[in-house]
Structures are given as C-alpha cells and as structure tokens.
Length: 498
Ligand SMILES: Nc1ncnc2c1ncn2[C@@H]1O[C@H](COP(=O)(O)OP(=O)(O)O)[C@@H](O)[C@H]1O
Ligand SMILES: O=C(CO)[C@@H](O)[C@H](O)COP(=O)(O)O
Image (cartoon, rainbow, N blue to C red; front, top):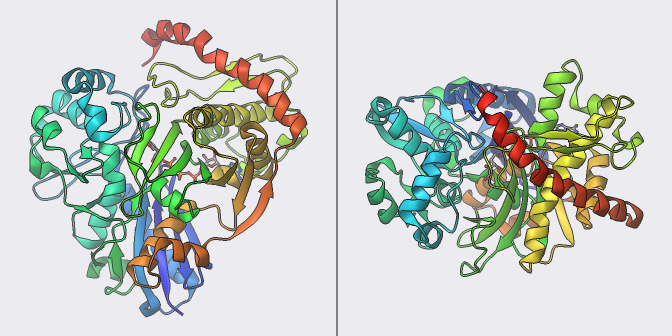
C-alpha cells in the first residue's frame, strides 16, 4: 500500500494526516502554536514555530503510523491564507508574519482604493481588505522601511513552510489570489499593481499549480522526521481551496461551511465573468482553472477559543460544548456578535468589536457558550444570504473544521442556514484536500474528481427542523441589528484601545 501526507498549517495548530490509496486516514497528529497579539488589531506568528511544530508533528506521525516510509510517496500543503512572510537575500525571515486576522492596515487599504479605483476589482476580483497581503506589504514599507529594504521575496505561510522543507521557493495560484497582487483570471502577477506601488518584480515568487511537483525533502528534514528524502513534495493550496477539495466541492450545487479559527461560507464557481461587485471574495480554486466565491467571519472558532481561554481555561472544547444542547434556542434571550478582531463579511469593518446583548443575572456558562455558537453561525448566515441573493442556490452544505466536531453545532447550522448539513468521515477538510493534491500529483488519479470519489465519505446528515428554523429567523433579524446599533459605540471606544 502507498501513502500520502496532507499538512494543514492552520492558525491555531498544524495538523498532519497520513492517507492510504483508499483515502483512509491511517494516522493524524497536531501541534499548537500561539498567536502574538501585541496590540488591539495586531495578529502575528513566528514562522519558525510553524517549522519546528510541523517537523515534530511529522516525526510523531511517522512514529505512530508504523508504515514503511519508502511507501510514503508524496506530501502536500494547505495553509492559512494572506499572512505576510518577508525573507532577506539569504532567505532568512525578516520579521514575524503578519496574519490574515490582523487589521492594522486600514490606511493602506484606503491608499489602494484611491490609487487603483475600479481597476483593483477588474484585476484582482476582490476589494482592498485589511486581511489581504498587499496592504501588509505597504504597511511594512511605510512603517518599517529599514526592514522592507532588506526584503528579497515575500511568501505566504505554507509557502514558507514548504521552502524550509525543500529549499525551493514557489507560490500556488489559489493562495496568490488572496494577496491582491494577482491578476486572478490571467494567472500572473499584476505588473500594473506592482508598478503603481513600486513593488519589485523579484519580490513576487514563481507561480505554480496546486498539484505541481516542486521538489523533494531536504536530507536534514528527512533525517529529523524519519521520512525518505525522495518523498515528492507538491505545492498545495490556500486552506479554503484545500477545504473545498477535501470536501469534494469540485462542481456547483453543494456549499461549504468551514468553522476553524475563521469561518467561511464557500461556493464553487467556473464562470470568472460573474460580477459579485467585491461583496464576497473571488479566488482561484486549487482545481486548475476553476474558482470559488467565499464570505469570511474573522472570529468564528476564535470566538469560542477566546471564551475558553478567558473563562474556562481548564476545560477542553468537548467539555465546554457538552451541555449546549440543554440550553434553549436563543440562549435565554442573549445574543453574541463575533467581532473580536473586527469583521470581513458582510461588514468590512476593522473598528467594530464583539458584544453580548441581553445578559441576565440568571445566565450561566452554558448559556454564554450557546450564545457564542449561535452568534458565529448567524454571522456565517449573513454570507449565505448574500450568496442566495446573488442567485447561488444552496440547499445542501458540507461542514468542516473544528466546528464540525460537535453534533449540536451541526444541527444549529442546519436550522440557521435552513439547509441540509452533511458531515464527513473526517472533519479535516483542508488536510484531506492537501493529501488529495499529493495523490493527484503522484499520479494515483487522473483528476481531483476521480480522487474525491475514492477519498471522501459523508457519514451523517442534519436536516433543518421547521420549528427551529422559524425561531432562528426571528433571532437573526435582531442579530443583524446589533451591528448597526453598536457600530457608532465602537467608534467612540476605539480611542481607549491599546
Ligand atoms: N469539540 C469541539 N466542538 C466544537 N468546536 C470545536 C471543538 N474542537 C475545536 N472546536 C473549534 O474549532 C476551532 C479550531 O478549528 P480548526 O479547524 O482546527 O482551526 P484552524 O485550522 O484555524 O487552526 C477552535 O477554535 C474551536 O472553536
Ligand atoms: O482569511 C481567511 C480567508 O480569506 C482565513 O480563512 C484564513 O485562511 C485562515 O483560516 P483558518 O486558520 O481559520 O482555517
């Protein structure tokens, strides 16, 4: 039997899985790393942590799997999107990576909007948002010019990790799409944008397809992990593109809901001429010459992990959500808006912050947990409503990510989205998508579609319950109002943040 490894470089942890030719997951490991949040709106990570923790996770995976490492044919990657990693001439990291959920770049976004106007949407198919990479590059250029001058190339998180494992520098189209420097339809770095912002061509790495072979494991990495140095390495893709691949979203009809640190509602798209006016993200898929549209909640799983870290440190996620099904819909009159680090869809707003509305002295911890889970799901519903308003018909969705581990949350998704929710055998969509890219690259299959028939199993379905759907519709209209009512208050409070 032959095997491939999928590496998912998430925001909270790196997750590695070993899959065989039947698509069975034979072993999984995960290693955490922290977020560095020096100030309100800042979010960074030390790229060295990604490398150290991935090597450790791979070593443990190889140790526990007990398979002949000569049979592990390929590795590919999925990674948190948009994060800026700057390397100097010697390919040393210049500063901490600035992540996708860092919102310090409002000024740079305004600059991009005023310099590029409508051309931005024409070239990149996306608006200027704080999380994307170009505003981060401009922020470093303006605020840390001595560091910017040292930079010889920029990479995204999983590209840096892959560089450290192979010594080769590349970026794939699906991740490059989230930089705001890619001409999304023509699949090339935009000369117009680079020239306008005086970004040297050399700063942009060579572009490749997600299933492209990019090299073999460096001998020292092979030694540290126990893997064979001849293991083939394939480029991989953005976590949401890989999540879509790992959930079999390779054609229109079925949507994707992913609740990781961020939350995502995603739909497959083949027609690049469709105009969503920049209201949703439009990116290249990890499947060649295909696209997807997506809405993003910045603090989805992050809201629950914030709650856990702040109020329930000793408990696991399983313990925290254990009794949520005993709390009635609406958390006894309490609503949560998940704007802990600002928001992307539908409110591109770096200043807004989260709220609990309707707190009562009778509320207990489980009520707060339910309220957090409902607020996250309402926020994702705002993206789904936009998709449906744009004529994308979604009655069935596959749910992946940490949020898909809990059946109460999956039923809540069915009730709030008023759609059938499908649960996969393995909720690690992005890691599975990465493994599938490696399987395709190794030549096990002729297409991702063929691979998905072998690799993807749906294990459970959650149908919307009409009485719940109606209750949630009423709550959703109150939920939407909370943003409007708290926007001005948060603008006044901004001065008091760090
Ligand atoms: N058992 C669980 N039940 C519900 N939610 C969970 C559970 N375990 C993890 N989560 C949620 O999933 C999130 C992590 O999801 P994951 O997909 O691993 O994130 P990332 O890829 O961003 O690192 C956590 O922040 C938490 O909110
Ligand atoms: O910014 C986005 C997508 O535009 C996020 O979805 C990141 O890609 C991080 O993902 P997770 O760590 O939550 O999986």
